[in-house]
Image (cartoon, rainbow, N blue to C red; front, side, top):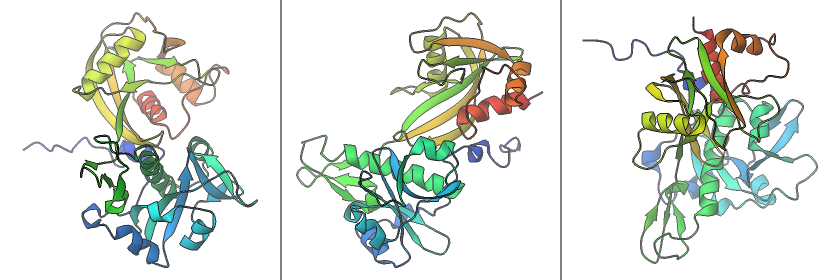
Length: 313
């Protein structure tokens, strides 16, 4: 019988992206109405304090400490009664996230936006992964406090992984928004398609991306978005990796796709798009290319797609 996993890379590509290093044991089957209170009662409990796209950190040179005990979190005004249970460390230490006001902080603390935390490498991989989980959950609770069926205020349940309406008994669950991000390559696999949005930093080109729509496969989303944004018709699609992306609660699904046409027609979402040879991409990645040209930052799934393609020979 053929081995279904003979071509699977180790480590898997997804593990090499930013926000993907979460090592907590989620133990989802053990969540209950008392999970959060029991976790907060554990003297070892550690909390991440997040809200409004920022995390409260204690800077320490080129890194930062994101962890607070329950007393310290509450002293900073964290709403621990609405904390979410992220999981447990290997020794059983509970890890939670709570919403905190980041406007008035002591001098030794800073509220830093998630993107800057990841780009600057302020947290190690496990903490960054836990941050992605906590940020997504807290963001969902902040924007889903009322029942979408009857409008009554709902209540948090199951450790923060559900909201229940006491008026109509409707149950609501955290959402994850799927987004395809793809690197289109020519049929001979010698050139790739990269584009830039108007809000990108000067000179930056990256992979095309877009949300998966209801009733749509990943492959068809790749084809549709590439056609809409760049006018390129796509044939075969191959999954490569995924990445949690807490902006606010997205799963990036990275794919390679085969271009059946090469004439580019950009829509109003893109400022420009062009084909790059493998040699051009390698030169930029090695720092020897066009000084005004930039590739996606390390840790982004777009960077992984580009780098892995450039390394292919």
